[in-house]
Image 1 (cartoon, rainbow, N blue to C red):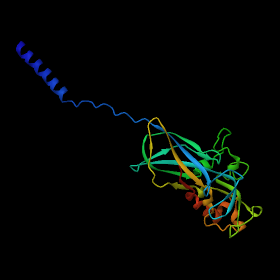
Image 2 (image 1 turned 90 degrees about the vertical axis):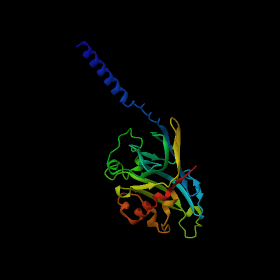
Image 3 (image 1 turned 120 degrees about the vertical axis):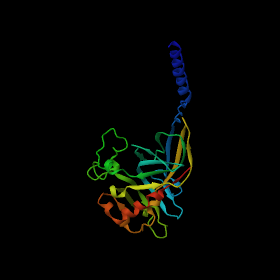
Image 4 (image 1 turned 60 degrees about the vertical axis):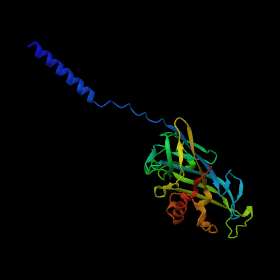
Length: 258
C-alpha cells in the first residue's frame, strides 16, 4: 500500500510539472508609446501679405485692401493617421485672432499623420449656448450678431475692412469701400479637409502644423462693384445667396505654411 501511495504521489507531481511546462509563457506588456504635444500655427494672410490691421496692402491683381478685423472659430479637429484612421481632438475650440498665431491642441498620440480636418464655425449645440464670463473663446461680443450671443448664435468668420471695388482695380485709397462679412448660423458650418502632407508627432516633444489663412479668398466670385455684395452683418443677412457663396469659399482660405 505504501508503495502504491508513493507511485500515485509521483504521478500527480509529474502531471503537475507537465501541465506547468505546457503553459504559454506570459508575454511582457507592450509599452504604450508616450504622447507628444501638438499645436496649430496659424498665419493671417490677405493674398501674399501677412496682415497687420489698418495697413494698406496691394494684392496680386493690383487691388488694394485694408483689413480692420480678421478672425474665426475652428472646432471639430481631427488628425488623420497614415493608416487612414482618425484621432479626435475632442472639446477643442480655437478662436483665431489676427495677432495670435500659436494655438495648443494639447497631448496627442505620437506617431505618423498625413492630414488634418476641422470645421470653421461651431457645432449646433455650442452655437446655441450662452457663454460664461470666464469663457475666453466664446465670450467675445464682436463674434455675436447682437448684444448677446443668443438668440442668433455666434459669428463663425468675421472679416472687415476696406477694398478697391473698381473693375480695373485702380481706385484711389480715399475711394475704397467698406465691407463687412460676418458669416454664421448652423447652415454655414464648413468642414475643411487639408490635402495630404505627412507629419510626425514625436514622444514627449512639441510638434506643429503650420497653416496660412488667406481671407482674400472669400472674395472669389464676388462682384465687388455692387454695394449689396459688401455687407453680411446679421443672421438674417446669412440667408442670402451671397452668404452661401462666401461660405463655399472658406475651404480655399487654408493652405500649408512654413
